[in-house]
Amino acid sequence: MKRVILNALCAFILMLIQTNVSSAFGIQMVCQFCAIAALLTGALSMPMMSSAISILILALICDLFVSGPLGIYAFALMVTFGISRALLSRFRYERVFALMIWSCLLCILFESLQALLYSLYYLSAQYWTIFVRFFWKDAIATTIATPIVMWLVLRLERLMSRRRTTGLT
Image (tube, rainbow, N blue to C red):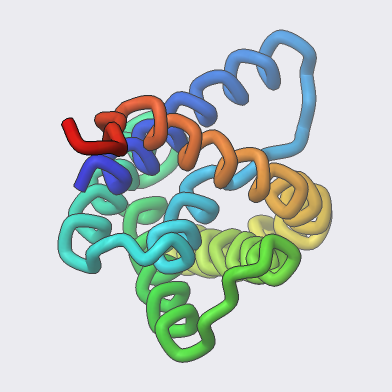
């Protein structure tokens, strides 16, 4: 349970940092930390119910900060979470490079779902042109950030866990 909370909290804090850096320097690239968190719940063998609840809470909190109609970001993230859990339970990949490829694919899936839902809501195809223009940069940033986030979550879990002593005492 602790790992699940640390995973969601780490994704949220990294998204806040990214938002501040992007607005300060005008960077038009988004690393999808929520998609990485959804991937890591399956890759690090986190419990299904608690990870689904934590990702849903993370999605709803992040949905408040995203411009647009309420619920589209959360719905797209929960669909991405479900697909990532289904694929990772079927194919067990524990190598970092394989997780980087999965995160790239999940980022593309997440952003294409968002483009589809925004296009359907507003009845406009301009979101597909935005998707085509920016998805590859976001996928590369998400792919590069995956091992860093995984390392950070595992280090925070190790920091928060109680140390076991060996020996007779």
